[in-house]
Amino acid sequence: MSRRSRKARLPSEPVRTDIEALSHDGRGIAHLDGKTTFIDGALPGETVNFLYTGRSRKYDEGRVTEILSPSPERVPARCEHFSVCGGCCLQHLAGEPQIAAKQQSLVDNLQRIGAVAPEELLAPLTGPLWGYRNKARLGVKFVRKKGRVLVGFREKRTGYLADIRRCEVLHPSVGERIEALAQRIQGLQARDRIAQIEVAVGESATALVLRNLDPLVEADRTALVEFARASNLHLYLQPAGPDSIHLLWPESSQLTYRLPRHDLELAFLPTDFTQVNPYINQSMIEQALTLLEPGADHRVLDLFCGLGNFTLPLARRAARVVGVEGDAALVQRARDNAAHNGLANVEFHAVDLNAALADQRWLQAAYDRILLDPPRSGAANMMPHLAKTGAGRIVYVSCHPASLARDAGVLVREHGYRLVAAGVMDMFPHTAHVESMALFVR
Image (cartoon, rainbow, N blue to C red; front, side, top):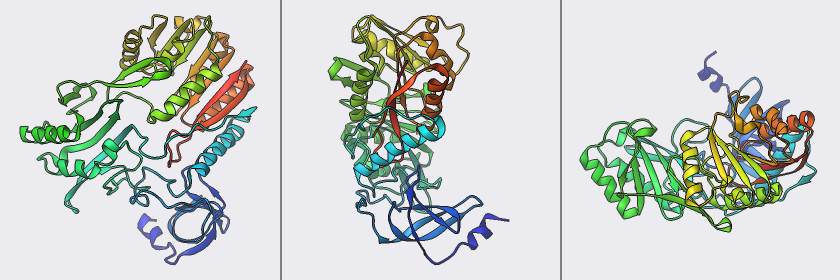
């Protein structure tokens, strides 16, 4: 049966229901006729009218048309584009309930997937709710039917770019210039050949990397330089793969961020992985060090170390730190950052941590402490190796509670560790992303 005919059978009149819970992606959950229904724009405890937007064998979907009985935790969305843009999904929920929901999601995942529970629930790490986002990838599209260029995130649950004029969660150097940026690209001959923009904000500069599918004519380059100069933005072009990225304006550019409590300055390139939220990053590092308790005589292993975000602060306190990362370019940046900050008690290795590791000499050494900050997929491949190092304490920084829960269950049940503490970090306010940290003690 075609998708069109299924859509034709959706009820045309709003349906009344009570919202029971919040889904992992920020939608209200209701049950109608024994089936779970996910409803955009609804919050737990509310009574709403909604229209069905989709039906499947396992669940249905809908969107709110009227709030009949609002939650006391409902607030007006600050962004005028909130109902359309998929960059945020929780602006209608107050800040404290947002982080409480994420904390509960972490606990639920640990219990349901890992069959474990922390002995202590850490207080959430929180920071500014607006203008916090220093890294982003924005789509760019010349829409002929609208006769203009769109710049921004995707619409909620579609592949189309949202029609937005500003972004309240992006750093203001970019978030307040979305419309101006779109207008400048619209004036280019290559307006339909710019595919995306990478945003990276440092301490003293904001960089944009434009993915141009064709080389730009001189007039387009001049127009972009004028915009960058007037906006105080550093502008890069990427006409092909990552190796083709080059600076258009100014003549030189250096992005850095500081960790003042550790007297550190880290340099990075605009396409490097860095933490999205610099405010939470500072608190996250302090909490990790507090939980890990690195001593002056300790050897510490930092897995998925990136450009040294945790490695270098650890090196200020420990005897020796070994950082391991799969991206060779990031490893070189980490080595450069260590040298720049005068740290000689740290070494780095470029190794795929999802590959076979039996012949890695760094892994055959003994360690007192381990920190790992894996990608969304987690660190399943590393779990058998961690206990063999003899580390008494492990701090696991996670960007996905399900993979953390899976790995936590293995550490506790198979390798003799206790899950002593866990808690969330509000790295992405107004979104459903759950970032967390857990402490395991042997």
